[in-house]
Length: 250
Ligand code: PEP
Image (cartoon, rainbow, N blue to C red; front, top):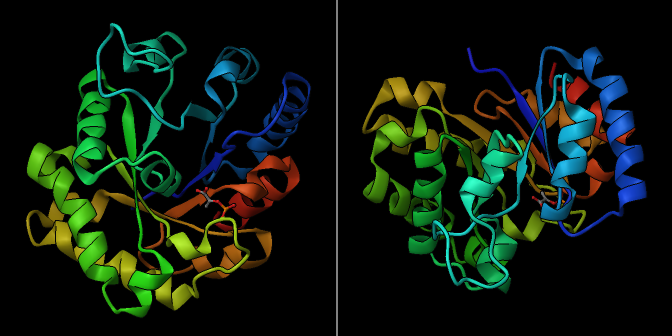
């Protein structure tokens, strides 16, 4: 039985003040959604604040990116070992904004995934097609290629502890959500890709949906058999809304 995970990607939003309030709200309400795992992904500079405010709360945290390098002359980058200093459980790799705005390739994403695993940080591998790709009918080819890059480098065993987030690019931050059936179809495809190599791993890998998920549509999405939670952007900046999404999955 896979426990659902609801994760908030705060992107480049917030201030010390607003994040303190957001964390307080999440902390207060987290006990009420005990059936679902919760995690938040703040900007790097607020990790200390997050660790301090969430310590002892049933909420994990992580970052939105990490460097593929261990240390050294990489100005502006943050190493995975530094995330361990703040007790991060998870790290996002290959978010579509990293892929499209910062040119992250399948190969680079796979290397970041490998670095995280080596350090004992659980990677959340983000995959998904653009609107153009969906309209051309190549959704499975794109998602399959993104997945294969990690499978080739790390092998199926890498997915025992990892999480996959299917995020159609056309649904991120647009208010346009995939229908529950559209999402389920791609989730089932992803699980089938894993199952073709190792059915036991496939049955335990959590696959989250991301793309304009909110309390109003979460119940339907989270009721689908292969949707094991959500990666939430905009709606995760409001503690009540974020917790309501988690409640819908409980
Ligand atoms: C995301 O950034 O991962 C995301 C799903 O954003 P939103 O919920 O705002 O579409």
